[in-house]
Length: 275
Image 1 (cartoon, rainbow, N blue to C red):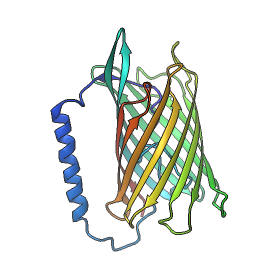
Image 2: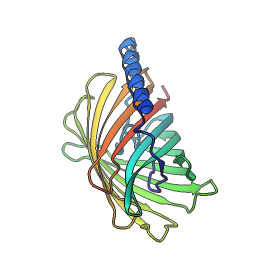
Image 3: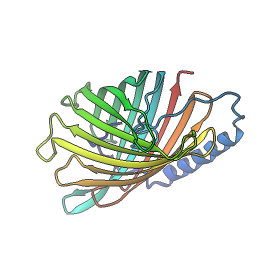
């Protein structure tokens, strides 16, 4: 999920109806997970990716086809004249991947929108490559490159990004804790006067599998915002659950640290992998 070009709209999250809907959805999800039958076969290994459930990406390529869909909601306080106002931003994405060996290609469709504001639609093509596997204390590494193509009337420029990934497992088993670090460069092809052309971001995270079907992940994200002089800092925690052998449900929540950061962030997504 690339969320560099922010689109904002009027606040809605503070409404009681929204909070009530979230509570009901969480209760329904808990009841669903409690009712799931035991897995009768070995599940696929889920790979952390941007937006599923947080911002960090692991160094492992998927095998075969994978279809993913995710949503992201941000609330950020912005200046409007002499006053500050909460603004909501939304992102919807769907992605098709195909992986073989240590490589993976992917095509993603993004829709960024805010109520009563403009909508940006972008198609992104990417290539992922694992460079080396972990050997002792030498971490595994990978690179991910993306090119974004505007497809809507209000979308502009061919943005590019390059991400370097590294990961280190503290043990040899599937449930061994795993530490992950990402560094990314993003180039805004057609920045406005107040925007940066080159944007840099760094994130570090920790993942652990608590059971065969359930993992927990946390990360810290430091990134330059697209506005000149603004820095975003975010702390996130998320979970992924194997509903079935090849179907994963992911969710996450984040809290901003600093005036230029989102006040909070929520993510939710599904990943369907080839068995």
